[in-house]
Image (cartoon, rainbow, N blue to C red):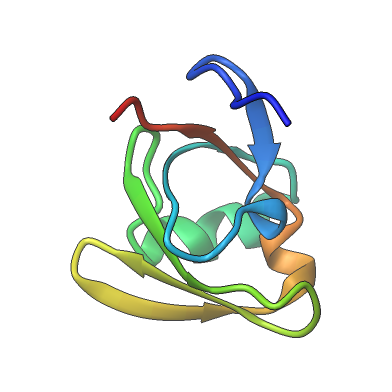
Length: 84
């Protein structure tokens, strides 16, 4: 499988553990956007996926803090790869 370029956008829920990505945007409504912004999700923020089993919650690290996101929430967060 070919590696994605840094310009391609993916759902956070599809990123494998150990990968680092950059936050792009949220496809959810105003409440979800407000909630995620209060947790430190700003455009360009780096995110490390700590755990993502394909089902259940996704555990991420943002600005040194670990956050647990429900799968539905993770499916509304768009990210791009960080160039190594």
